[in-house]
Length: 64
Image (cartoon, rainbow, N blue to C red; front, side, top):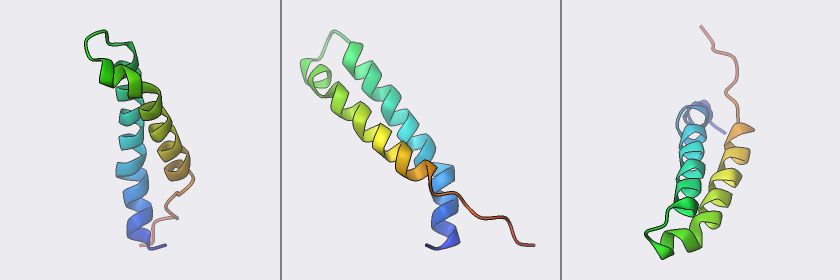
């Protein structure tokens, strides 16, 4: 993997997957939209899998 992807993974994709998990929790507990409530658990699981994958891809030490 290129160093750019590793930096992008820890800087963008890992926080984005955390936001997806929080959005899934909000979708699960909101009472207005049945579609979001139905897919809330699936949204949480997608965020969780993304977080597990991207948290294991860490950038190496910075070169000067």
